[in-house]
Length: 519
Length: 95
Image (cartoon, rainbow over the protein chains, first blue to last red):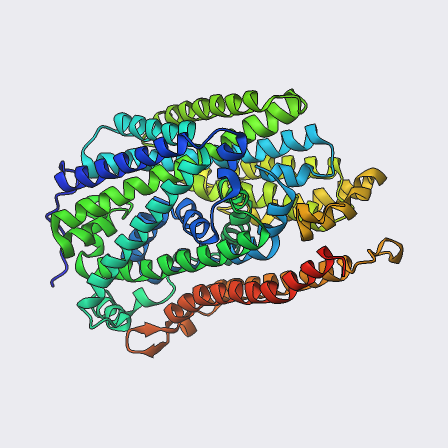
């Protein structure tokens, strides 16, 4: 088991097994879509899967929506090349889920119908709140979508040898098909299938690693330390500035509770209790997955070696596929490659659906048509928005080809934490929240986050290659999230309106008792 | 909360209990995760210490943050399934 500096790999060559598994996934999911399409007759089906998804199913679907290729390939790569420092990300991506459960899931289910704006707008003025919420939603979704699309194109090119543009078009076409025809029913089942594949693939890979170490993770870590020095087991250079780590931590923790495609999933279950139980399942599944990234990352470090991993792809993203190839041969590589592709497809489908809901349900139905749209029109507009957003996603993916877009996921989380999350929490828990307060906190959160990320080292130094950056933090959440809360509170206090706070009592009743509690 | 607006069926007591539990658990979650981050930032030597050969305190604590996050969700679900749901049922039945 000598560490290699160069590795013989079949990554990038057309792989029959990968193609086979991928084809199977596409056929299965399109079959699901066909089945779902016949059940998608109303907006209730299209956005919320008829609200009949069970807590266990939604737990898997939440995990499927959340576990992106970035977490599977990116974190495994980071751990394999930096050791402990990569694990900081494994923990960070999980810690938002308890917050989702404690503060958001149940009130959201009881107060809203399809989008988180339903909750914020419940007792405030519809048009301004929905426009501001749609800005926050579309900013989050678009940035997340760009990051996923560009990642998908690069990944597929690397693993299957398909040209970048064709890969983006394939992903775009499949995601539009799922959402357009099958709506939330198809999207939910695609997420469930993907979560099974991803968790199963990661579990098999982790087991194959641990079998070489008598199923003892400590022996694996010891082998890594023996080969690459004890430094791989302890904090290193990644966290130089504590404020950077805290700011990223805030974005990850509270951004999770403001991601539109995650929030939307709570409308697919029958009631608040089911929403609650589904987060418990999702947290367990996602936690187990991130624990496995410890094993996958150190396994790749020991069996493949950091230099060889960087040699195949400088970002380290091929660590998990290389490990699969080393331990299970070309067939297993093919399986893992197909799983990574399926992972991306499922995430972009969820994103597209939540973006389409903001465009059609929030903007068209409530702002443009002022609640006068017929059910048929609502469904038609939702489908038009899906196709539009899908095409925009493909075009953006092609536009940003070759750009460093990894920061966009952190940015999406920062906007979710600074625009969507404060608005949700204040509208759920604070009687004094007003329309002006909600609009200013959401707009200020979105705008300052975009502005500060532009002025941050991430864009100024890493991308524009300037000497210095005006704003010191890589992720702005430490500044923008408190700012958004402050704006929401101060503006509300200055614009207090009796009729808006008067609605709080009935909102409170509905939030705790559900629609059944209505007089 | 002004007394005049208190609901006769005890909804406000239930709401206050839910807020208390949610706030306490959220605070615990914040302390857990940011405690870990601050240790990484300010006490690297401590985290480098080995608990058993191969297993540093840092890796152990990282895994514990994940496991404890899940345990916190379990604590909330347990509380809600017993106390919160019972309180809601009582109010719904007008008792």
